[in-house]
Length: 314
Image (cartoon, rainbow, N blue to C red; front, side, top):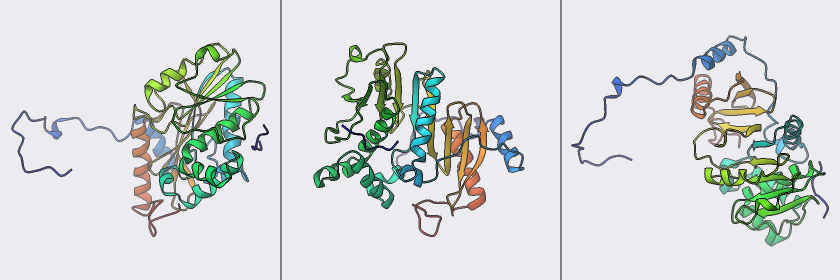
């Protein structure tokens, strides 16, 4: 088939058991590591580094007219593959406004129309299914885009949820749809690529990792909806974050294969400013404290993406 892609308050009972040590006796947890503190101070003094990568424009880049997000993801994967990386993590919001996906915001509705057309699901019943399970079908849309860049390899699109995707008829010729509960490692040929959509629980990551059965197999863990370790990235240390774009508190953490980790502050006008650039991956809590703290210092309560009169922009 042809491809549609171009390119609690506590009660009154008193506890009579052993008491926890007083909080005052515990060492205070530093707000940030010394290295991050130094880098943040340098940036505030005007001597901080310039970004080596840019965040695709929010949120025009998600749409086909721009195509910038698609191009950035495919480019990062291609470079990583050329460098010999065979275990990859790719993570970015699969829809423009992923935090509000259940409420059908205007951006997400527009995106649903676009991907339903790309997937051949414009008929009334099929479009409704696409809207209802927007995250699942959006991940399929992006997985198909990645598959189209591996035209000389068979690409397995491995679903981890119970949403049937058989109505998505516009598949690229080299793509095969499979379920994580049914696919067998013996089916994977030596040059195959495996894209695991929304791997989720740690056990599922480990199970999916076993689908790399040959040295030249490429396995891509794409867009986990949650991570059980409560960290920025997935639980498998041998997976390289070849393209990583995640909203954290009042900004974004961004990394592309071959570049460092960028912490961008998102301002009320939706412009992004680099606060920290470092080679090592920051902890989730650390990144969140930096971005939230800097936002409050500059803008107080007037940097809220949702509340009218307080910086709403979505």
